[in-house]
Image (tube, rainbow, N blue to C red; front, side, top):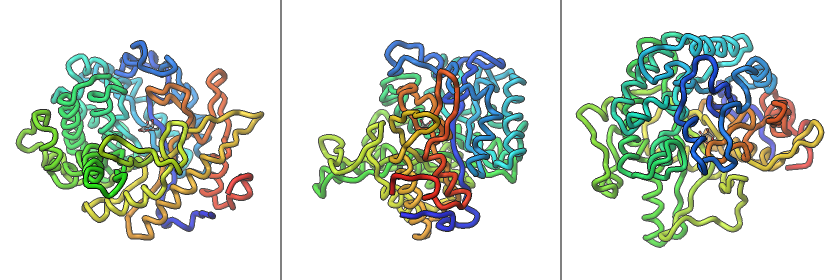
Length: 446
Ligand code: FCB
């Protein structure tokens, strides 16, 4: 399979993505306040390897070299996130000038290197002080978020090419308040659905707060979407897939693009549904300029639980490699919703990489990227408007509850020395982006 830059529209943007808590470190520097992930990591048993983001990739100090690396890959854009507790250590009120200065230097550093800054305002590091009063389960957090968004937009302005309000609200609500795998680690569906509603409201409020401040910058949101397939044609399996689609996808897509919650899910959630006030859905559904889609895998649903197809291959996360799901998802989004242009804001795979000398051979990751980029190109051919693709991730980093054990990077990080080494997949991506034939850069795989 040969994929080239020409398989994508001319205006199509290629980039790499990261997030603040996963790479920055410097948790106690520059006036940063504690976030819910600082707290969570210190609770025994929460993080598989017992680690935390105190140092991570030390990007807070190494950012100039990291931006050079991104430039060296031939990327045109860099998707990064801003840590709310660096901007407002208490989540409200006083602004920390050192925090704004840091992101201003970072954004200017991107512009100096010809990289377009794609900022995400919330990639899960909520100020702990807001969690102390209920976090996203408290409606007030939505308004605090909009205030913070405005502060950032006023300072960084239109130097930023695009602002995404939230990264993956499913994760910061259901995974965090119902499943308990992410901070704050609760197990309560009612609180989780309240959190989801307030996240969505916060998204709408933040868009409204930023619109006039940065009129020509793109504003949008990033969702993790997971196409749900039934394990068989049996009605019970079809119903299970329909529920999974509602739980992961429609619960977030429908409010944003239809100003309503999906009726079947509203009924299924019964007394756990959130309190929705007059005007909330109109606020949530106001126009946005792009939809960010994070895609990793699909689910295969049976009446008695999820199924893992035996013939498939799986990543180090245990996630099925299923590129067709990305084409199916994108085409379905086009058919079911009226959408702004889409960016694939994350896509990638973890494998147990090993450094050998100055090299890391990761043919499975190369294949994953090839196949998924092929799936995007196919969706574009089928008429879906996709404007860009960001590989997750620039470099290995703190993979949340999995700690440092799962490596998603194009670039290998030796955490003892902080040395960065390009994996074969980075060289492959560089080949694609700079127009060199991939075969010259990577050998030993298809
Ligand atoms: C996504 C997150 C990102 C990263 C990848 C593997 O859910 O947005 O931070 O952890 O998964």
